[in-house]
Image 1 (cartoon, rainbow, N blue to C red):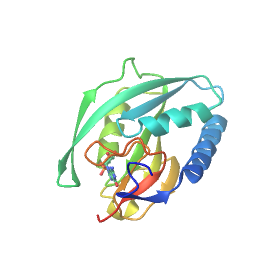
Image 2 (cartoon, rainbow, N blue to C red):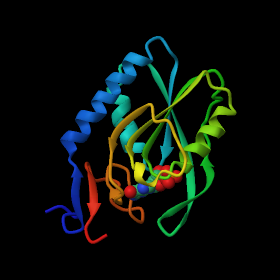
Image 3 (tube, helix red, strand yellow):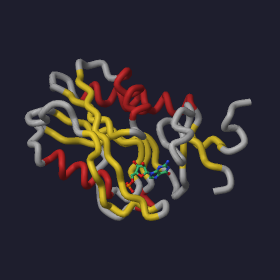
Image 4 (cartoon, protein in one colour):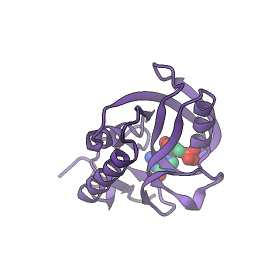
Amino acid sequence: MAFYDQDVGTLIDEQKLQTRVRELGEEITRDYQGKDLTLVCVLKGSAFFAMDLARYIDLPLTVEFLGVSSYQGGTESTGEVRITTDVSKPMAGKHLLVIEDIIDTGLTMSFLLENLRARHPASLKVCSLLEKPARARTQVQIDYKGFVIEDVFVVGYGLDYAERYRNLPFIGLMKGR
Ligand code: 5GP
């Protein structure tokens, strides 16, 4: 019995997840042929997804990490976002693909896109494993999307509850929430 069995049920199992991540990797491989691709991995949540995705992209690429902290009012994002760790290289002239775990209200991604756009990349696109459209407060174009989910709180595959459960190999639902 795994440590999480009592608290977490499965929403998207490991096989379904990996199949979709592979498909996204193949799509990105086709679209970025001949381009200087930089994956901008948004910490901490998207790290697990980004590393799997990178392995499915058959292109030379660079990985950068961007740490953000969104101020939460309860479980709601307030839209106030702070960059806690910045990328290590200039982003000007690069083809940037921002990798996110989940787009919920869209406020974090809107902030990030505005911030990255100001650095004059050659192009700027978004890849998000999950989208929760029911809670969208601002329109964000998701160029590569893994799954659309209902308005439920998910954990696993990078997503946490109080910093726990990121290491589950699937997307789960907290029981009793
Ligand atoms: P947004 O600014 O789009 O509302 O929020 C995005 C961030 O909120 C995500 O990167 C993630 O950290 C957090 N978040 C939103 N929904 C969930 C969820 O269902 N589970 C977890 N663990 N985090 C979530």
